[in-house]
Length: 117
Length: 108
Image (cartoon, rainbow over all chains, first blue to last red; front, side):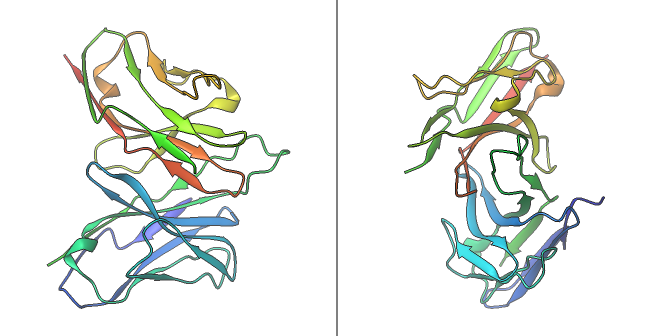
């Protein structure tokens, strides 16, 4: 299994440009999420999905869109990039928490380092 | 509201010294708690989960429901332990809440 993969690894955008960060997982996980990581602020949840066709907002959703057409893929779209969106973006996946599942860790992708000029 | 607090942003210890990274949480239910580690420019990876009560790379963490804490401990720090450590809580709605992280530096 490849686990959680993200592309690209690095990206530089100009203010106002749009782009899509790709995320895929091959573990058949229902739950997927996007975080941004900023110095001194830890990881903040942008959007998440509990299954194909279902998405919801996290802590910092403004300026980002997501969709979940398949179980495997969860792309993150920046509609009009702003310098405040310069960050490292991590995608993660996990199985839902259930009493019969003891180990419910979240698996992370390698991250996308985005710079907006 | 669910919250995870890591009071120390930076922590430096000498090699061979004990290390404790603090984590406190607030959650109105039965939490599932984790410690994740991120080595320089790498992805986050699971270090410990409270439910398995295991020791990984010499680290242990005990859930103290009375003090709502899940501190990470290691009796003798090694240089390779230098990394960013995140405490995380998983709610019953499957959301993960992360602390702001503690950057641990082990001085040779």
